[in-house]
Image (cartoon, rainbow over all chains, first blue to last red; front, side, top):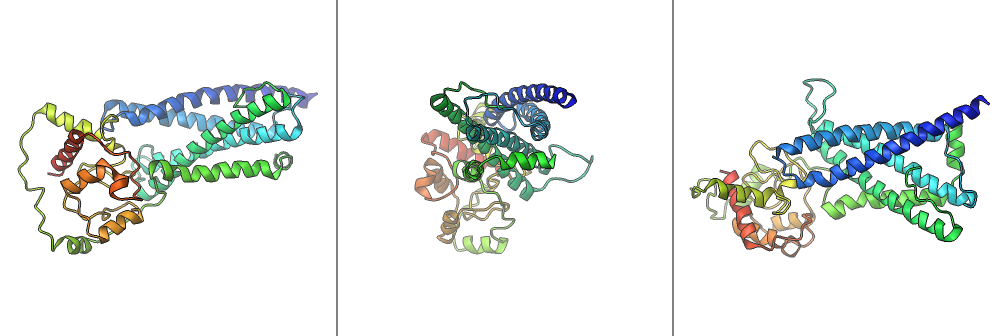
Length: 173
Length: 183
């Protein structure tokens, strides 16, 4: 009985986290599209960059919690018509999406740290060009990775719709 | 938790993970393909002696002693916009230019005029550009003009992923800006 209550509670938390991640993702994505269009010396640039770091960090933290909940209480198979294998494939893609956000967050923090934009110890010299280049590259890799996963989740959704007559459009489980 | 994870991971077929792995592998290549980015930076590409050796036999003008004509603030802004803006050459998004600027994704352009190709620090050049250095390419207003009008045509296989600036006026403004910032 107790574990059933826990399961319901955790599903609620997981669902709230998923919604939060979705909203944060949209905000960070719009910010990311806007950021390169603002000239480097423009006063707006710093504000946009700081906003990117703040919302990105929040997205990273939420994704860590979501992945933890996912492993503790894996999402239930709600669509009875969907074969177990198709369900697993979809869930692996969705779980990988949260992992991509975690990877994106970690590399983003390292990039900002190596660029001197965030400091954990005041006055410490953290600027490191080689690390900035490597982590920046990986930050970009994870960006492409989550876009690829989202496209595949959508394609899988269409496939399930045609093949199994299952109507599902949620990208974030 | 580990047991739950193990069980959860085991329920998936290998090909499901393979798909994720393939997507990640493709993603690893995309920043290089689309932006020309490279994950590692070479500290030194050529020593000062090597640079001098490449330029000593050439009779190049001193671009930094030249008296540039005085321009209005409006003209100066036009030059900066051509270099830095999204609607201009977009150069500033990858290149730094000012004396005290830190290196970014692409080489710093401060005092680039009169320098051989592929000699800046903190950047890994494409083999195409290194080959051009060996062939004696020196950055002058003329070679920069030719390069930015169509980079892929001028140096095939280089990593500056841009279409090229078709408008000669914009190219002229960019080159003037580089010259002015290097004074």
